[in-house]
Length: 364
Image (cartoon, rainbow, N blue to C red; front, side, top):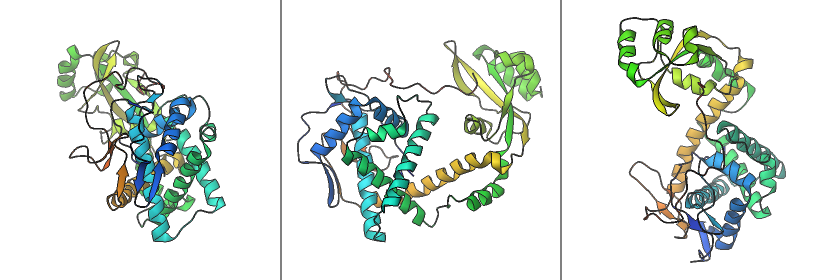
């Protein structure tokens, strides 16, 4: 688990790397701290190293790109990095004091491998083509930064293993979970209908009157699949698109379109996308294993996030004001580092200049 993190994507103004030495400490948790010097070195490394920046972008879904001024980083990146360091320090201290645990050389080696795998998985999920491997990203970090990340991974992994709610990532546990949720891993065949705004009302009326999926697609869809009655293909748990297709299908009944469409842009025009499951086939465990593992990891992350929240609320946390403010940014958010809303400036985060490739719809 990447330091038990469920990241909050922030949209914040840019901030310079220099002139932030308002105190000797950048972030602190109880008696542990990261100095301004160390923190600024880490930010400079992220800002100037595309490989590191790309994987952190993917992992946190935050833009770690440069700000508008020379030698700057977007404040979204600075605030997110502050959160990461705080989370790492708080978990490290909790595990050390509660379980008296110190990771061995073997545990640290395993933590490095798992961190590399998690970074790679994040980049793949976000469809980012990073300039180098995740191992190269870690290798490009200064020794202190790299060692802190690996140690935090080891401590987080240990804490997750000690939670009562954690599902062990063993072959036996995966099979047990699969057997109890086998229908969630069916291979799904789907049909789609891409309906323009001018036809949406007629489509809805025809659907209510009982027209079949194939008839609806042929009559109203502007997608190339319309000639085949909307038939789009089948997706097994091993498919990279499986999770999104499964989410799109949800609880929709076989051979019927969902009542609520997604809205996507096609050639500059917003259109309605309807998805219908047309066939569900039980997938053998061997083919579903990767999806089962991903689901269990997600559940463990949810359990761990709750534990992390308790740890953070019980810790004495300090943040140099130059990097953000520790607190609750809104009534619906948890405590985190955030930057208060400020007037627009030349350093404002440029959301049009992305380092990486944006995600695309499955149905293209």
